[in-house]
Image (cartoon, rainbow, N blue to C red; front, side, top):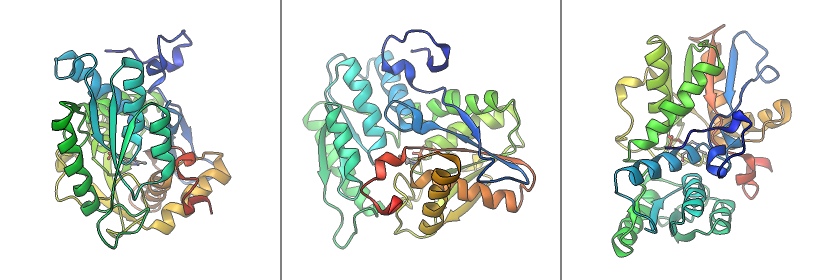
Length: 313
Ligand SMILES: Cc1ncc(COP(=O)(O)O)c(C=O)c1O
């Protein structure tokens, strides 16, 4: 397994060494107080999202126990971020990679994966669905295609909804980094849920250090929403033990968008819809049960992934 070394200053053996160890910034301009929001800049990973961590960990674990062999094709269902991470790891390690994605996700994502050498298979959305709004139904269609391609290509399925490496990447990585960088000064954490891997992993790490640290799931306020990367209304998530979740908050599209724009203008932080959702949820926690305390969030991906959407319009 790789030692992650972004901050070490050493010459890295490959770009994979630049995954993780992202900076933690206090959002003082956006939230002058009372209380603090600490934001982990995971959009600074090589693929522009926190999913680089997950891609690397899933393939490391599979290679270590023989589920993935040299030269084998890798397939995954993705809203684009995990696919970009996998495309990067596969490029470095020499695996062909097939990304299966809904047509509802933004074009930048497909273009970036293709540039990294991936084959991108786009799946039509359910009848009546709008672009930018990816539903659980749309995802079920993508799953069907990904499963069939895995059999056809005798591929390794890097299934981010099922593989424990997803949550472990955030437990040993994101969560431990949050604890260390903040000097253990975190009272609450909130996270927009897709696979639930980030919330599960970070909650496990933080609660191991401080069992009283409250961990919240962030959901869209309605099933038909524009916050890409999650909010699929799935009945259960294999990676997310409900016992780790102390509460749930909902965020509207408008709140997520307005907050992502404030992040850009006030903090110089150019991140995506879900980053806006997380910061909006953190502000609500600071106005309510966590007044005067410290709330941590992860900013999942870069705003560059949404230039063709109305996020910046
Ligand atoms: C932009 C973005 N935000 C949030 C999430 C949700 O993260 P997780 O799958 O760890 O729940 C994802 C997942 O793909 C994402 O791409």
